[in-house]
Image 1 (cartoon, helix red, strand yellow):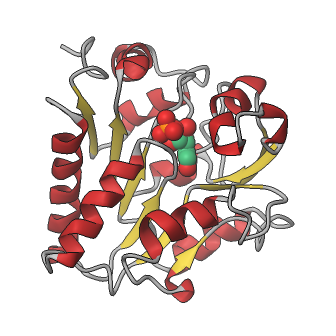
Image 2 (cartoon, protein in one colour; image 1 turned 30 degrees about the vertical axis):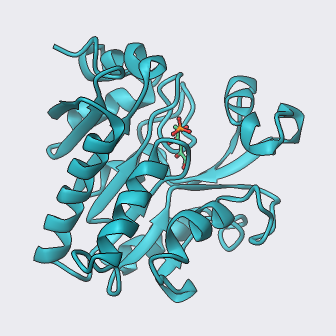
Image 3 (tube, protein in one colour; image 1 turned 135 degrees about the vertical axis):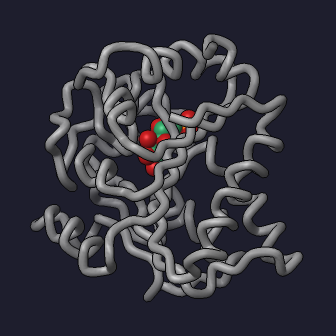
Length: 240
Ligand code: F6R
C-alpha cells in the first residue's frame, strides 16, 4: 500500500488527480471506477478545474460507478446518477454512452455488471471512499470477499450516515442498493482510496493495519498489489 498524508483535502485531491492524469496520459481509453459521497466532491472539483485548464481530458474514458440505490429513477435528485451528473459528468462533458451504473439495468442480473466491466477490459483505475464502518462501495461488514456485483440491504447506520443527502430523514434513504462486490473492486488494476476528516481516522487505521477480515471490508485492500491511500492530516492522524 502506498500511504500518503496531505495537509488538507485540497492537496490530497490534487495528488489523486495527478495520479489520474498519469493514468490517462499513459492510457487515455482507461476504464474508471467511480464513487459518490462527500469525499469525492473536492476530487471531482479538481478534475473539472484541470479539464477547464486543458490539463486533463476524460473524452475517451468509460466509467463504471460502484453503486446505486435501488428504486430511484435516474433523474431523482437523490440518485447517484444525479450526483455524478452534477459533480462530474455534465461539467466534464461525459455522455451517457460512456457512463455505466449497476441500477436499473442489472437489478435482475447483478453479475451482468461484472461481465460488462470485463467486456470493456476491466477497471484500470478505481476511486474509493470509505464508510465509518469500513464499507467500500456498499459492501457492509460481513460481506464475502468473493462477492461480485449484488443487491445489498443497507444497515441502519449507513442509511443514517447518508441521511443528509435525503433532507435529513434517514427513513427516506432507500433500504437496498446494488453495489460492485469486493471481488469486483479487487480486480481493478489500480485502486485509490481517499479519506478526509477526523471521523475517518480510526477506521482508516484499522483498514490499513488491522486484520484482514470481512468485518472490516476495506481491509481486503491490504491484499491488492497497487493501492494508494490518500488522506488529509485529520484522517491520517493514526497512520504511522
Ligand atoms: C459511494 C460509496 C461509499 C462511500 C462511503 C464514504 O459510492 O461507494 O462507499 O465512498 O460511504 O462516503 P463519504 O465520502 O460521503 O464519507
